[in-house]
Length: 80
Image (cartoon, rainbow, N blue to C red; front, side, top):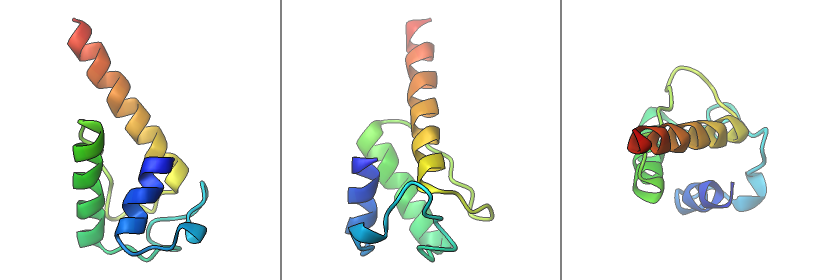
């Protein structure tokens, strides 16, 4: 979760507000533009596309799970 915290901190969110159960919309009040920025930065950092819905609130733990899933999918595809 360290890189995710750094990215969100770079977007102006204090690190002390970032916990596994923190919600992107409700707690951090990220708008759709910021969600897109987050998604693009995740792609740059991890090399995979991480789909973040703008209508569904997600916890930081759920975002981390999506990152892991995307990386595993990419690894599986590269091995075939």
